Length: 325
Image (cartoon, rainbow, N blue to C red; front, side):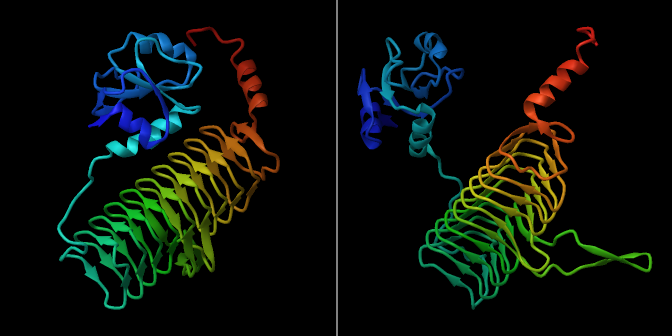
């Protein structure tokens, strides 16, 4: 529990109203919980905020909420994300820095302040960086490099020779460096092609639960700095992804495709192989990228078209339909 004044001072934010309100958690406006701090981002939310049980809000300077204590920031949602760190609960605790059930190869190098949980396996010549945490059931195979301040949640797997930068997060069940889907047909059979490359996750990459990033055939599959990958995403071998991309649930990216910086692929987007997608492209949900995308913008459809063209086409398609059809 924190006094509202302490929260404001912690983040150097201006405060108006009762500074002594005790805050025991955060909530959304629709949660309407007493004792919590909330936020608004739009002026049309002020009326609901005023009539709510919530005692305090983060809001913009030009949008104070009558009758409520207000902390001010130009971007309230960003401010509430920072404040939320004060209220994060413990996730899973165990005694000691390295749990007695962990299996760590004698050649592995573990930073003195890294934390290794129960039933973790760390392979030959692996390196775990400072302040990194491996939760129970994590498997780190031979020669893996994991940087500083990384968090690998339960049952994440990092295959041999893969590299994780600093501040990388793998959610439960994420698999980094599984074999690429490579076979050659011979005498009526599919012969597996050894996948000799690895995966490189640059700094501040996050990989969601049960997502998979395949190792390259000869070189690296690479995910650029700050990219965030949602749950249930499949990234094939030799994909090259730029910085600060957003890849949303159930998206699949086929092999050897290259994405620029700040590319967003919304849910269930499919991308065929050996394509180039330039910087600052957004592809809306359930779309298929089947050709190179060489101009920044927003796209949609199967196959994709510029979003405005796609919207006009859909509107025309349904223009003769009755409302109940």
